[in-house]
Length: 117
Length: 111
Image (cartoon, chains in turn purple, red):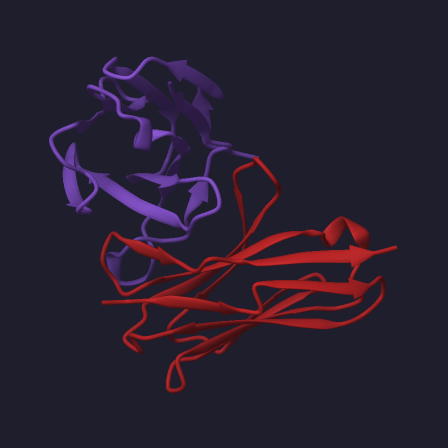
């Protein structure tokens, strides 16, 4: 069964460092997303990506964050100058086209746990 | 602005019991609503997706309903098993790219 894969599963970094989280979405999906979940809190939307550009982003997704689809399979989230409060589980998701051309069912990866020290 | 609330926050039931998890949303212009399962420290597994034009969806022992007029969705789990123990999340989408999640219901099924 097709699945979304994420690497690394856990990354520990020092405050101020840059991290790149990687995702391979389901191959025939067209919409890609990053969500995050701080320990004990809700899953929060960060950004969506469609047709090689950001289609929507939340207030959390400021200049510290960027996304890229460097090739036909990978989708990355870059976090610059990491802060303690960036510690969270970061989830990649993808979806196909649903009804009326809108986003369909979301499929999530297992997540990348980021710990900033 | 869409907000999603789940009640109860936690639930403990004996094995074999039928149970209902509740989800409410503030924006009735919902495009779809999705239920997920999350095991501790793990990713989100999609259980059921209900489109706005549907009233319910079924998969095995799970049945999810959607009532747009009242802003509510329920997830019914029949004949619960210890393996059903997990956090159940509902998430609503109003047709854009952002899906809003509830805080989840932590379910514990006792053997």
